[in-house]
Amino acid sequence: MIENTLWTELFRPKTLDGYIGNEFLINKVKQYIETQDVPHLLFYNTHPGVGKTTLVKIIANALDADVLYINASDENSVDVVRDKIKSFASTMGFSKWKIIICDEFDFFTINGQAALRNIMESFSNTTRFLITCNFVEKLLPAIRSRCQEFEIHPPDKKSVAIRLKKILDDSNIKYELKDLVHIIDTAYPDIRKVINIAQHCTINNQLTINKDEKIRLSYMDDVLTELKSAGCEVINLGFCCSGNCHALARKLQHRFRRRTSTCNDADPE
Ligand SMILES: Nc1ncnc2c1ncn2[C@@H]1O[C@H](COP(=O)(O)OP(=O)(O)O)[C@@H](O)[C@H]1O
Ligand SMILES: [Mg+2]
Image (cartoon, rainbow, N blue to C red; front, side, top):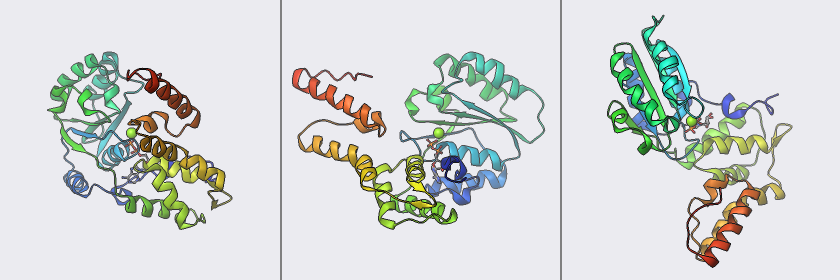
C-alpha cells in the first residue's frame, strides 16, 4: 500500500518538527505561531521541492484560522481575486484569522496582483496572506512591500539524507546507504525529487538501484559533465528537461545544431 501512495504527500511534514533546514526562519515562524500573530508572509526560492508549500501549510495549520488555498498555476486572474479571495475575506469566520495561501504566486496575472493589493490592506485586521513563489521578481513591488519576505534556502545534503533515511526507516524499507547517497547526489536540492526517486526504486519494501536505473539517474549528469568538458554552455539544460531523457536528447540535438550554426539562444520548447 505504502508503495502506491504518493510519498511526497504522505511524508510532507504537518508540523515544524519534521521540517528540515532554514533554522533562522523556523525560529521566526515559531514566534508567529506562539503568539498566534502573523504578518503577510512571502517565501521564495527558484528551486522546486525545497519546502515553500510545506512551510505555508504548516503555518496555516498551526494558527487558529479558516484557510483558503489558491494555487496560482490554475487560479490566477482578477476574477479569482473578486469571486474567491474577496468573498472569503469579507464573510464572517469561525476562527481568529482568515489565512489565504497563494501558492506559486508568480503565475498570478499582473491585474490580479494589482487587485489583491487593496484586499491585503482593507481586511488586514482579520486576514493574512501566505505567499510562495519561485521567481520573486515577477511580483509587483506593491505586493512585496506589504509582506515580510524570506528566501527559503535548500537544506544541506546531510539533512536531506537524514530525512530520507527516516522516511525509509519509518516505513520499514531496506536499503543500502550508498544508494541513498546516489539518489541525493542526483536530485539535490529538490527534496520532492529525492523522495520520488526513492519511491520509484522501492519494490517489496526494498530500495534497489540496479545498473539500468543508475545509468538512467546519472545519464543527465554524465551528459552535462561531458558537455562542460567539451566547452559547451549548459546552464538550465538539466532543469528544463527534469530528468526526461527524450526531452534532454532533443534539447541536446537542438543545442549542438545551434552551436555549430549560430549563437542564437532561443530554446525549442
Ligand atoms: N524543508 C523540508 N523539510 C522536510 N521535507 C521537505 C522539505 N522541503 C520539501 N520537503 C519534502 O518535499 C516535498 C515537496 O516540498 P514542497 O514544500 O511542496 O516544495 P516547493 O518548494 O516546491 O513548494 C514535500 O512534500 C516534503 O515531503
Ligand atoms: Mg510548492
